[in-house]
Length: 269
Length: 244
Ligand code: SF4
Ligand code: SF4
Ligand code: FES
Image (tube, rainbow over all chains, first blue to last red):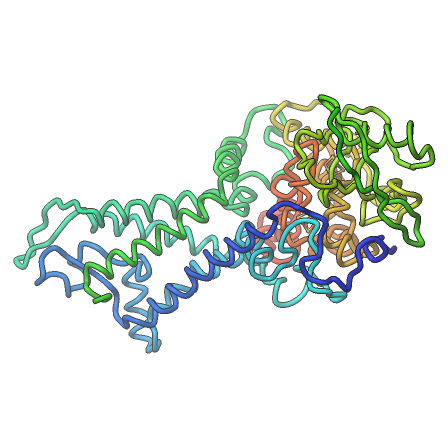
């Protein structure tokens, strides 16, 4: 069936053609800038330091991996980094980074965001795209791989656990003799924010909403007694309404936490 | 009295042009009032569909300043009247005349969806927690603004391979019905073309009933399709523990 776009709004006007008179281009432009900035920063950061970026108030302890106070979240969990190292990855940090990268790339909110802001498919609603008669959506390679989102979710949950484990480190310091004491600095708060927003982001995911009850036909079948899945689904549904917000907050928090630890270590001098 | 200029599309399936009208503006006026004024005072043959003027019948869908909207719900005091306001028909469907489009394709699509299918021995008792999820979908007024704004239909012209957001909402309302026993997953994947939706959410933005089309119907359906076709682990579990 032919739509009437052709007769009403010449396709030859091409990408961006629209009758909309509002600032429709603002959101895709801001998305492009924000995602672009993060990707450039993360790429430079990942290639900058071969080893895990750690900091400790006690100079002597800072080099030993298990006695650090702050560990940049890019390198968490540290054991996975060490594993990547021992396998001989040229950049062992990628033994970790594929998890957040895969999770975020296949995230339903992120898909909307980059299909719009980066691929212009569509850049905004009721705005013409690059003329393409060959649209396949998510039905063919590579975008059919978006269906693997829940597998990345399982690994992302693991990442959440380890980020919290690092919070335990971030609130204590170890002296040269190996004695532990409570410590709190700006970095402790920054790393705490990273763990918190990552948790909210992961646990507001659309796939987890489905897996924790959304996928079932019925919450009380057969006898009217409420199953636990109604509660879990209800909770995730509440969080899910803010999934996009958590996506951006956690992205900003992880980037800033890495930046902050690097500033302390002196990488930017 | 204040006046405003409107550029209204006049034409049919062979093409057409914008015609400019100047209309007096009164308090509380909506775009549909403007169209009625033009019909009453200038061009009685200007075609448009409407019925309730209360945003409930879903007939008066059009594109006002390029935005898919119900004309009866679009107030003039929300539009910049210092420049001409454009009013065009829906672009995802063929124009019949002026602002009236042929949306019959939608009714054909609807017929192909497997209807509510209860088990033969159904006990007709339902509980609130089970029905409330799908109640949101019952608000649909079939204005087809979501169908119109969806780029899969509007830009990519995939009417033969994609049923569009409105009907994904309908499938979701059936799939989430506690007493329904039909299986529409193969249909969703192969005929309904759910994978063509790239969840860019324009349907949700356009819906006058504020149905969370993408988050509450399309994504849950996509996840059900993943369960069935793209998740080997889930398949294995189903094999061991039977269908959940
Ligand atoms: S979210 Fe999907 S169905 Fe809705 S407008 Fe976008 S592509 Fe179309
Ligand atoms: S889902 Fe919303 S936009 Fe789509 S037809 Fe129904 S009421 Fe209209
Ligand atoms: S006239 Fe009924 S929805 Fe506008």
